[in-house]
Length: 637
Image (cartoon, rainbow, N blue to C red; front, top):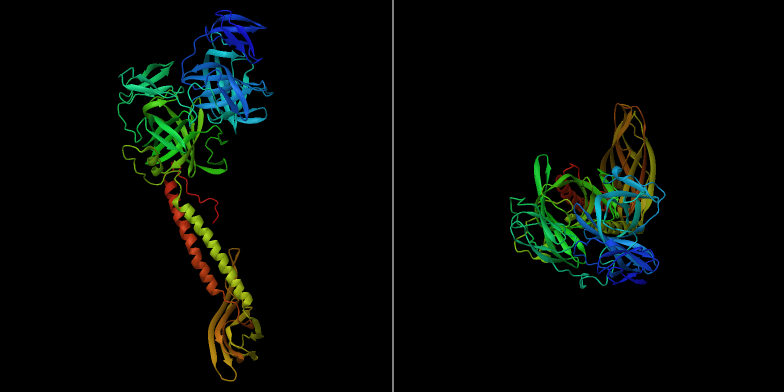
């Protein structure tokens, strides 16, 4: 660290980074150029616009395990408000920038690239750009002015300068193209949460959520109603009393639209309500209504802006009594506009809705210059219980991830004073209550089916089986009726079943059989009738067949003895081909009918649960504005 006296006021000025060529005196706001050990006064720096950022010169933090300190900042102003770029110094001497805008933090450093940087005028939201061998997507285009600086800086801010910037994202990388110089500067880095940065020495004392910040009180410039600002990122406020929309500038309020809203909406969650979700204490600071029109029908929903000093911003979205907890995503999906299906973070998302969303009512605080009537193109993709939403304007594309929130969870967290609206119908990303039940039934089915198969196999293997007779005879066309007596066979013990199989070479014919099992010594008999038929041919160039050439009959509980078969047959009188019948008699042949009936009974349950699950999905997709049909997808059925 080098220290010198300010040539204007004599106050000490420190340089901690060798890359810092300029410093702004904290006492007299003089801009000082370092020349060796001397400082040259270049004139007074413009005053910073007051904000409620928790970061200050001297704040420390950690990024990916590396300690850094904040040594300077520049402040930029654009149409929607201001943002800060903090100049940070790592312990190893590396310089970088910490961007703080709309509650999002990005750590980035300048990157040399070999590819030509596209012209700012050629870029649109979702334009694909390749830099340093990586693919990125344009997400935000801004025209801003650098208005002031503070602390140590690597370049001169002086009276300010205009700059066009383009933000790009790709996977977990964040790139900013700075068109203030030629060729444009490229800064690459990663986004991080407030907690991830492990800040110390903030402007406000830290608490369990990371930090606290005092809400500032104002009065509406139109009706004098009390207003509150919770964060330095807040750019506009909707007055609940008169409906005016007020812009926030340098701790001052400017009327943007007087009494812009004639209808007073009553939010289900009162502005100022506090609740704990996912271990974080949130406060409702803003409420707006949005509308989309499909085939001439208006559909309205409500969005509540949540704020936590340690977490930034989040949203609660209520539609038809269903709720979603929503956070803006820095890792955006690599999905082309209008794409119907893609994978994101390991989940399969399907396009559910598309249209335009228009703001119809505003109350409370917002981190952009919100206006009644502003609109954007929207697409919703679902993978219950999650929903990815894409919003596109002429300057920006944002992706947000919502997770379905049961109304009971919301009621317990915020304890609203008025009853919450009752859920109606099936919502886009509402979890299917039959999904887990169906999976459980399927798992149980496979367990029971496996058990039934094992038992059947054990039964087959332990059964005393064997063939006791094989006999072959010919049924001739000249003798369309006849009786055949087989050789004798002996059963030395009682058998549970005796299976008599007929295997024929029938072709476009039929034969009627009456099989009689006769005990030779006692004359006791068992009888069974059957008909075997088989037909085949060609129709329209396609082969067809019906029936079977084989059949079997089973006699139950047969005592020991000496037996023979008497087979009476009758054939088609108009046929002139012989039929060969191979008869086989087997004792205790495995029985499969009970097993088949059991399996049919068991399979009814997963089929029924699958039908119930599919019925729920049909109701879900009936609400889709795209008219798609439900898709069971791949599961573990």
